[in-house]
Amino acid sequence: MRLAHIALVVVVVVVALVSALLVTRSVLQWREARNLAIATPDGVDESGFIDIGGVAQWVQMRGLHRANPVIIVVHGGPGFAMSPLTRVFRPWESEFTVVQWDQRDAGRTFSRNGPQPISIDRIARDGLEVAEHVQRRLPGARVILLGHSWGSAVGLEMIQRRPDLFAAYVGAGQMSSKAEQETLSYERVFERLRAAGVRDGVDELRRLGPPPYKDLAELLVQRKWLATVDTPAEQHLFQRMAPLLLVAPQMSLKQTHDYLAAPKVAQAGSFNEVAEFDARRIGGRFSVPIFIFQGDRDLYTPEEPTERYLSEVEAPLKDIAVLPGGGHDALLTMPDAFLRELRTRVRPRVLADGISGS
Image (tube, rainbow, N blue to C red):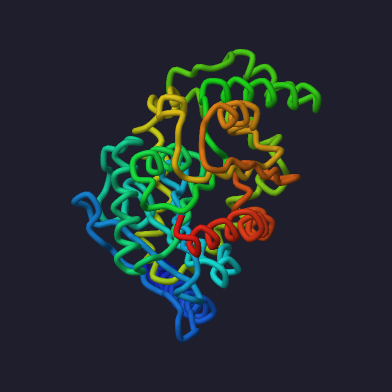
């Protein structure tokens, strides 16, 4: 009886603790929703599932003023949705309406539908439907397409296929020649490990050898050591973002669990296509101004291949902004610096084109 009594007490305590944690989370989510609320009379605050390519996909639109230009964020990973990280982009919402879209195999879309076959072509077609949805909700809006990492490959496809939908393109952590970028990444990570005297890392990368990698498991070996020599802000990116994920409004515990599981599924399903990606195959002529925002310490997509690629393409405008100290995820770790570049380089061009009707 004594053991049974102890077991009962333990169960009661555990249930009480779990209940308290769930209540605390609900309160924090409520506070976060209140703090992030759009209160301006001409603001935009819409979120929910819409039919995109025959699949229910999560789309979120937020901004303080309906007349502002729109930024559609095509997130990277693949599988790393940014919609739960609204607080990071909150300062952007005074000057832009920010559209976050959870792609197939990412975020709430993954949680709702489970694994879906993905490819750059499939996600690009979905993205064009998202852009058409935005135009229906905000008629006449000037739309900037912001592609990050994997999303930058998708983004180039989107502006090539439907330039009429977009006023400008911004690439962050831009994929150009993935083979060239992975080779540079390997060399730089290896050299940093050697210079720091990290013998285990040097030995394991030497055994791994330079790319191409045969599968995701090999790539993740290189990524493990990259994380140890990455720019300081990005070494602890997950720890910085995790609290935002845990209190994100409208996120159930199941959605949070699935959010964390999605990248592995998405990256395994797209590994070969990403490894073989070369932006030159998309075409060398674009009808949309192209801006590249590049962290100067990006070890995932080093800038030299992207600079060569950009020098070869034709576009109404081409511009590169280097973010000192920035890594691959500078839009998350340096959102204020990223916003300054959007404000000074992109927004004036978009608004001028809108006035002129060009």
